[in-house]
Image (cartoon, rainbow, N blue to C red; front, side, top):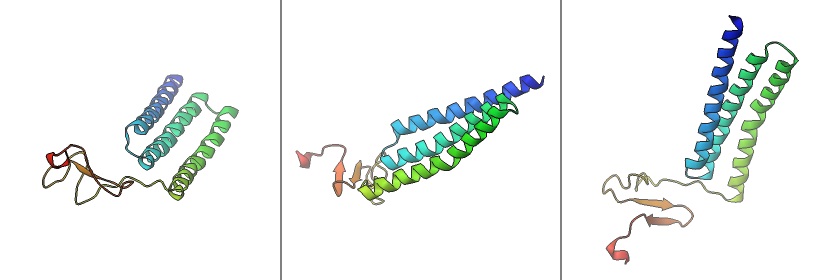
Length: 138
């Protein structure tokens, strides 16, 4: 009975960790710029890896393997957020600017809240760009 409970708990932790790792991978693909992608990867991968390691600790029981997994978990707990911060800082120093939504224009997905015009501010160009062509531009 105890072995069955141990298996259920370890599999739940392993599946939860796998879920967070997959969500982090989807965040890398779906999010718009470097900083949001780094945020998704840093948080979900840390949580996913920790849950997977805890699941393996439950499965292993009390042994030398559990001590090694605890050391790996502690190492990941401290190094993953630190490395994410270092990468973000290096990108900022190198000149990578985050995409910014201009409050006057609104969300690029819904456009200007007053007119519905789908214009977004592109910080690399320094101006506005329209996602649709208007007759005055042709």
